[in-house]
Length: 234
Image (cartoon, rainbow, N blue to C red; front, side):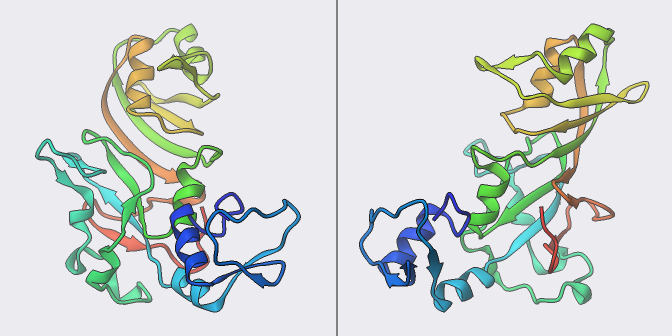
């Protein structure tokens, strides 16, 4: 079910236990039941309704906020999700309710020293799409740097570097101006851009994520958030 994008694994277990899953028309309630690749798997209305109620939010995370819960005393980005920080609430199409914070988690990291687009979601399907092992969603960044970069170094940023023993996927990296690079990545390793730049003699002094897939940060102010719009897809 998770592989087909119907829901997350945790949600699949809950739906199966409640009798909300059908395999080839038959309700399945036993966890671990196997299905053939050709099987037709559908969700009952109760499960579909629960998924519809799940929210996905777009936050312009400021520098100084951790994307994930941390024990180092940093503020967590989710603490910014409040009624008064909702951007243009009259055009949001739905009202903020504290229950929307339940199970809300970031889909991808954005380190404390970086700002920009951070997705928070209750929907396991969205999280899998953005950060699943097979995800190839593009992430776009504006990166201000110090230091000098040779043509060979720029070529390596595009392809040829490794982190933690793993060869990085091909990226798209080019200059925007004399001190700012434009990055498009298809993966998201911990502090990836900063570590890539270190390998070619650059120091990152500013990093901003401006796009994930087809969703852009746009004019969303720093520290404010909005709902993923109806019909908006990554």
